[in-house]
Length: 336
Image (cartoon, rainbow, N blue to C red):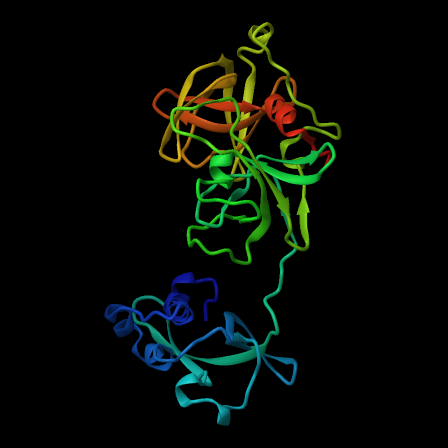
Protein backbone atom coordinates (compact mmCIF):
# COMPACT_ATOMS: atom_id res chain seq x y z
CA UNK A 1 0.00 0.00 0.00
CA UNK A 2 1.20 3.50 -0.78
CA UNK A 3 1.02 5.06 2.66
CA UNK A 4 1.85 8.60 1.44
CA UNK A 5 -1.16 8.73 -0.91
CA UNK A 6 -3.41 10.92 1.23
CA UNK A 7 -6.50 10.47 -0.96
CA UNK A 8 -6.50 6.73 -0.32
CA UNK A 9 -7.28 7.28 3.36
CA UNK A 10 -9.86 10.06 2.99
CA UNK A 11 -12.89 7.72 3.03
CA UNK A 12 -11.73 6.14 6.29
CA UNK A 13 -10.94 9.46 7.97
CA UNK A 14 -14.21 11.08 6.86
CA UNK A 15 -16.24 8.24 8.27
CA UNK A 16 -14.31 8.17 11.53
CA UNK A 17 -14.77 11.93 11.96
CA UNK A 18 -18.51 11.64 11.35
CA UNK A 19 -18.79 9.00 14.07
CA UNK A 20 -16.75 10.94 16.63
CA UNK A 21 -18.93 14.01 15.99
CA UNK A 22 -22.13 11.92 16.22
CA UNK A 23 -22.97 12.79 12.62
CA UNK A 24 -23.81 10.54 9.68
CA UNK A 25 -22.14 10.79 6.30
CA UNK A 26 -24.23 11.90 3.36
CA UNK A 27 -25.56 9.28 0.92
CA UNK A 28 -22.93 10.00 -1.74
CA UNK A 29 -20.06 9.38 0.68
CA UNK A 30 -21.76 6.28 2.02
CA UNK A 31 -22.23 4.84 -1.47
CA UNK A 32 -18.56 5.47 -2.34
CA UNK A 33 -17.45 3.31 0.55
CA UNK A 34 -20.50 1.23 1.47
CA UNK A 35 -18.85 -1.55 3.44
CA UNK A 36 -16.88 0.84 5.62
CA UNK A 37 -19.97 2.92 6.21
CA UNK A 38 -21.98 -0.14 7.19
CA UNK A 39 -19.27 -1.10 9.68
CA UNK A 40 -19.01 2.29 11.38
CA UNK A 41 -21.78 4.77 10.59
CA UNK A 42 -24.36 3.21 12.89
CA UNK A 43 -22.08 2.78 15.87
CA UNK A 44 -23.05 4.81 18.92
CA UNK A 45 -20.33 6.99 20.36
CA UNK A 46 -20.08 8.85 23.63
CA UNK A 47 -17.37 10.44 25.75
CA UNK A 48 -15.76 7.05 26.36
CA UNK A 49 -14.17 7.39 22.92
CA UNK A 50 -11.40 9.98 23.22
CA UNK A 51 -10.06 9.81 19.68
CA UNK A 52 -8.66 7.70 16.89
CA UNK A 53 -5.63 7.42 14.66
CA UNK A 54 -3.74 5.28 12.18
CA UNK A 55 -1.06 3.32 14.03
CA UNK A 56 0.68 -0.04 14.37
CA UNK A 57 -1.54 -2.69 15.91
CA UNK A 58 -0.40 -3.94 19.30
CA UNK A 59 -1.01 -7.25 21.07
CA UNK A 60 -0.05 -7.79 24.71
CA UNK A 61 1.76 -4.45 24.63
CA UNK A 62 3.99 -5.35 21.65
CA UNK A 63 3.80 -4.11 18.09
CA UNK A 64 2.70 -6.57 15.41
CA UNK A 65 4.12 -4.71 12.43
CA UNK A 66 0.60 -4.39 10.99
CA UNK A 67 -1.22 -1.13 10.31
CA UNK A 68 -4.49 -0.56 12.18
CA UNK A 69 -7.23 1.97 12.85
CA UNK A 70 -6.59 2.69 16.52
CA UNK A 71 -9.36 3.85 18.86
CA UNK A 72 -8.52 5.48 22.21
CA UNK A 73 -11.04 4.87 25.00
CA UNK A 74 -11.22 5.90 28.65
CA UNK A 75 -11.71 2.31 29.78
CA UNK A 76 -11.67 -1.03 27.99
CA UNK A 77 -14.53 -3.43 28.75
CA UNK A 78 -15.30 -6.93 27.51
CA UNK A 79 -17.52 -7.29 24.45
CA UNK A 80 -20.07 -9.23 26.49
CA UNK A 81 -20.82 -6.07 28.43
CA UNK A 82 -21.43 -3.96 25.32
CA UNK A 83 -24.44 -3.75 23.07
CA UNK A 84 -23.61 -4.98 19.59
CA UNK A 85 -24.10 -1.46 18.22
CA UNK A 86 -21.43 -0.15 20.60
CA UNK A 87 -18.75 -2.66 19.65
CA UNK A 88 -15.82 -1.51 17.56
CA UNK A 89 -15.51 -4.01 14.66
CA UNK A 90 -12.40 -6.18 14.48
CA UNK A 91 -11.57 -4.86 11.00
CA UNK A 92 -12.63 -2.25 8.48
CA UNK A 93 -12.96 -2.50 4.73
CA UNK A 94 -11.11 0.43 3.13
CA UNK A 95 -11.12 1.49 -0.52
CA UNK A 96 -7.52 2.09 -1.62
CA UNK A 97 -5.88 3.66 -4.66
CA UNK A 98 -7.09 5.79 -7.57
CA UNK A 99 -9.08 4.79 -10.63
CA UNK A 100 -9.91 1.12 -10.13
CA UNK A 101 -9.80 0.87 -6.36
CA UNK A 102 -8.75 -2.12 -4.29
CA UNK A 103 -10.63 -3.05 -1.15
CA UNK A 104 -8.23 -3.51 1.78
CA UNK A 105 -9.00 -4.99 5.19
CA UNK A 106 -7.68 -2.76 7.98
CA UNK A 107 -7.66 -4.24 11.47
CA UNK A 108 -8.74 -2.15 14.45
CA UNK A 109 -6.96 -1.67 17.73
CA UNK A 110 -8.48 -0.42 21.00
CA UNK A 111 -6.13 1.32 23.44
CA UNK A 112 -7.03 2.49 26.92
CA UNK A 113 -6.16 6.09 27.76
CA UNK A 114 -7.29 7.38 31.16
CA UNK A 115 -7.10 11.04 30.09
CA UNK A 116 -6.27 13.15 27.06
CA UNK A 117 -2.50 13.90 27.01
CA UNK A 118 -1.48 17.52 27.43
CA UNK A 119 1.08 18.57 24.85
CA UNK A 120 4.22 20.47 25.74
CA UNK A 121 4.16 23.56 23.56
CA UNK A 122 5.72 26.98 23.06
CA UNK A 123 3.53 30.08 22.89
CA UNK A 124 5.11 33.08 21.15
CA UNK A 125 4.05 36.48 19.77
CA UNK A 126 2.15 36.32 16.50
CA UNK A 127 0.40 33.01 17.23
CA UNK A 128 -3.38 32.64 17.09
CA UNK A 129 -5.31 33.54 20.25
CA UNK A 130 -8.90 34.39 21.13
CA UNK A 131 -11.72 34.39 23.66
CA UNK A 132 -13.58 31.07 24.02
CA UNK A 133 -16.71 32.54 22.35
CA UNK A 134 -14.88 32.54 19.03
CA UNK A 135 -13.08 35.86 18.65
CA UNK A 136 -9.73 35.52 16.92
CA UNK A 137 -6.53 37.54 16.64
CA UNK A 138 -2.84 37.24 17.42
CA UNK A 139 -0.83 37.09 20.62
CA UNK A 140 1.05 40.37 20.91
CA UNK A 141 3.64 39.81 23.60
CA UNK A 142 4.60 38.09 26.83
CA UNK A 143 4.81 40.79 29.50
CA UNK A 144 5.66 41.02 33.17
CA UNK A 145 3.64 43.15 35.55
CA UNK A 146 5.78 45.51 37.60
CA UNK A 147 4.34 43.85 40.73
CA UNK A 148 1.77 41.34 39.48
CA UNK A 149 3.36 38.42 37.59
CA UNK A 150 3.46 37.27 33.96
CA UNK A 151 0.77 37.85 31.34
CA UNK A 152 -0.18 37.29 27.72
CA UNK A 153 -0.92 40.60 25.97
CA UNK A 154 -3.17 41.22 22.98
CA UNK A 155 -5.98 43.55 21.92
CA UNK A 156 -9.05 43.93 24.13
CA UNK A 157 -11.45 43.52 21.21
CA UNK A 158 -9.84 40.09 20.61
CA UNK A 159 -9.58 38.79 24.18
CA UNK A 160 -12.35 40.74 25.90
CA UNK A 161 -15.47 41.04 23.69
CA UNK A 162 -18.51 42.84 25.19
CA UNK A 163 -19.92 39.66 26.79
CA UNK A 164 -16.61 38.76 28.48
CA UNK A 165 -16.07 38.72 32.23
CA UNK A 166 -12.88 38.35 34.22
CA UNK A 167 -11.48 34.81 34.42
CA UNK A 168 -13.09 33.81 31.12
CA UNK A 169 -11.05 31.17 29.31
CA UNK A 170 -8.73 32.17 26.48
CA UNK A 171 -7.69 29.75 23.74
CA UNK A 172 -4.71 29.33 21.45
CA UNK A 173 -5.15 28.57 18.67
CA UNK A 174 -8.50 30.32 18.59
CA UNK A 175 -11.50 28.36 17.34
CA UNK A 176 -15.10 29.35 16.57
CA UNK A 177 -16.99 26.63 18.45
CA UNK A 178 -17.80 28.79 21.48
CA UNK A 179 -16.68 26.14 23.96
CA UNK A 180 -13.42 26.17 25.93
CA UNK A 181 -11.40 23.08 25.04
CA UNK A 182 -7.95 21.58 25.53
CA UNK A 183 -6.51 24.56 23.64
CA UNK A 184 -7.26 26.80 26.65
CA UNK A 185 -4.07 28.65 27.64
CA UNK A 186 -5.22 31.12 30.28
CA UNK A 187 -7.84 33.28 31.97
CA UNK A 188 -8.80 36.88 31.24
CA UNK A 189 -7.21 39.16 33.84
CA UNK A 190 -7.91 42.61 32.39
CA UNK A 191 -9.86 43.82 29.39
CA UNK A 192 -10.85 47.33 28.36
CA UNK A 193 -14.50 48.28 28.02
CA UNK A 194 -15.41 50.29 24.92
CA UNK A 195 -18.45 52.45 24.30
CA UNK A 196 -19.97 53.60 21.06
CA UNK A 197 -18.73 57.07 20.10
CA UNK A 198 -15.97 57.09 22.72
CA UNK A 199 -12.41 58.42 22.47
CA UNK A 200 -9.57 56.04 23.40
CA UNK A 201 -5.80 55.70 23.22
CA UNK A 202 -5.46 51.99 24.03
CA UNK A 203 -6.91 48.64 22.97
CA UNK A 204 -5.31 46.01 25.22
CA UNK A 205 -6.09 43.03 27.43
CA UNK A 206 -4.07 40.79 29.75
CA UNK A 207 -4.37 37.05 30.28
CA UNK A 208 -2.94 34.96 33.11
CA UNK A 209 -1.41 31.80 31.59
CA UNK A 210 -2.83 28.72 33.30
CA UNK A 211 -2.19 25.79 30.95
CA UNK A 212 0.24 23.19 32.38
CA UNK A 213 3.46 22.57 30.47
CA UNK A 214 3.03 25.86 28.59
CA UNK A 215 6.32 27.49 27.63
CA UNK A 216 6.39 31.21 26.83
CA UNK A 217 8.92 33.10 24.75
CA UNK A 218 9.36 36.48 23.04
CA UNK A 219 12.37 35.23 21.06
CA UNK A 220 10.45 35.08 17.76
CA UNK A 221 10.63 38.89 17.63
CA UNK A 222 14.42 38.92 17.64
CA UNK A 223 14.64 41.77 20.18
CA UNK A 224 17.65 40.29 21.96
CA UNK A 225 18.26 39.61 25.67
CA UNK A 226 17.25 43.12 26.80
CA UNK A 227 14.08 43.88 24.83
CA UNK A 228 12.93 47.49 24.72
CA UNK A 229 10.41 49.69 22.91
CA UNK A 230 10.61 52.90 20.89
CA UNK A 231 9.47 56.08 22.60
CA UNK A 232 8.05 58.19 19.79
CA UNK A 233 6.59 61.62 20.50
CA UNK A 234 5.17 64.44 18.36
CA UNK A 235 8.53 66.18 18.79
CA UNK A 236 10.74 63.33 17.50
CA UNK A 237 8.36 61.45 15.16
CA UNK A 238 9.94 62.85 11.98
CA UNK A 239 13.22 61.10 12.81
CA UNK A 240 11.36 57.75 12.70
CA UNK A 241 9.45 58.41 9.49
CA UNK A 242 10.45 55.97 6.75
CA UNK A 243 11.85 53.37 9.16
CA UNK A 244 11.10 49.84 8.04
CA UNK A 245 8.64 48.01 10.31
CA UNK A 246 7.59 44.38 10.54
CA UNK A 247 4.32 42.88 11.76
CA UNK A 248 4.38 39.30 13.05
CA UNK A 249 1.15 37.41 12.54
CA UNK A 250 0.58 33.64 12.38
CA UNK A 251 4.25 32.76 11.77
CA UNK A 252 4.46 35.15 8.81
CA UNK A 253 6.29 38.53 8.80
CA UNK A 254 4.70 41.47 6.96
CA UNK A 255 6.87 44.49 6.20
CA UNK A 256 5.90 48.15 5.98
CA UNK A 257 7.15 51.67 6.67
CA UNK A 258 6.54 53.86 9.74
CA UNK A 259 4.60 57.01 8.93
CA UNK A 260 3.49 59.14 11.89
CA UNK A 261 1.57 59.58 15.14
CA UNK A 262 -2.11 60.14 14.39
CA UNK A 263 -5.11 61.37 16.38
CA UNK A 264 -8.86 61.18 15.95
CA UNK A 265 -8.59 57.96 13.91
CA UNK A 266 -12.06 56.45 13.27
CA UNK A 267 -12.21 52.72 14.07
CA UNK A 268 -15.02 50.16 14.12
CA UNK A 269 -14.60 47.62 16.94
CA UNK A 270 -17.20 45.01 17.88
CA UNK A 271 -19.78 46.91 15.79
CA UNK A 272 -19.12 50.14 17.72
CA UNK A 273 -17.71 53.32 16.18
CA UNK A 274 -15.02 55.09 18.18
CA UNK A 275 -11.93 57.23 17.69
CA UNK A 276 -8.34 56.71 18.78
CA UNK A 277 -5.65 59.22 19.66
CA UNK A 278 -1.87 58.91 19.86
CA UNK A 279 -1.62 55.78 17.68
CA UNK A 280 1.20 54.96 15.26
CA UNK A 281 0.41 54.72 11.56
CA UNK A 282 2.46 52.61 9.15
CA UNK A 283 2.19 51.97 5.43
CA UNK A 284 1.95 48.42 4.12
CA UNK A 285 -0.39 45.54 3.45
CA UNK A 286 -2.88 44.83 6.23
CA UNK A 287 -5.26 41.88 6.69
CA UNK A 288 -8.39 41.12 8.62
CA UNK A 289 -7.76 38.99 11.70
CA UNK A 290 -4.28 40.35 12.50
CA UNK A 291 -5.36 42.39 15.53
CA UNK A 292 -2.92 42.01 18.39
CA UNK A 293 0.07 41.29 16.16
CA UNK A 294 3.32 42.80 17.45
CA UNK A 295 5.01 45.40 15.24
CA UNK A 296 8.74 46.14 15.55
CA UNK A 297 11.02 48.85 14.18
CA UNK A 298 13.57 47.18 11.90
CA UNK A 299 16.01 50.11 12.22
CA UNK A 300 16.17 50.30 16.02
CA UNK A 301 15.23 46.62 16.61
CA UNK A 302 12.70 47.74 19.21
CA UNK A 303 9.03 47.06 19.68
CA UNK A 304 6.55 49.68 18.45
CA UNK A 305 3.34 48.12 19.78
CA UNK A 306 0.26 46.10 18.82
CA UNK A 307 -1.43 46.29 15.42
CA UNK A 308 -5.14 46.83 16.16
CA UNK A 309 -6.78 48.29 13.06
CA UNK A 310 -6.13 49.12 9.42
CA UNK A 311 -7.47 49.83 5.98
CA UNK A 312 -6.71 47.36 3.20
CA UNK A 313 -7.82 49.87 0.55
CA UNK A 314 -5.48 52.60 1.83
CA UNK A 315 -2.71 50.13 2.79
CA UNK A 316 -2.35 51.68 6.23
CA UNK A 317 -2.14 49.96 9.60
CA UNK A 318 -2.51 51.41 13.09
CA UNK A 319 -0.56 50.44 16.20
CA UNK A 320 -1.30 50.93 19.89
CA UNK A 321 2.12 52.14 21.15
CA UNK A 322 3.69 49.86 23.73
CA UNK A 323 4.81 53.01 25.52
CA UNK A 324 1.08 53.68 26.19
CA UNK A 325 0.40 50.08 27.27
CA UNK A 326 3.43 49.99 29.57
CA UNK A 327 2.40 53.21 31.29
CA UNK A 328 -1.30 52.41 31.64
CA UNK A 329 -1.06 48.73 32.60
CA UNK A 330 2.26 48.93 34.47
CA UNK A 331 3.90 46.13 32.50
CA UNK A 332 7.20 45.64 30.71
CA UNK A 333 8.48 43.25 28.02
CA UNK A 334 9.35 39.88 29.56
CA UNK A 335 13.04 39.04 28.88
CA UNK A 336 12.32 35.47 27.77
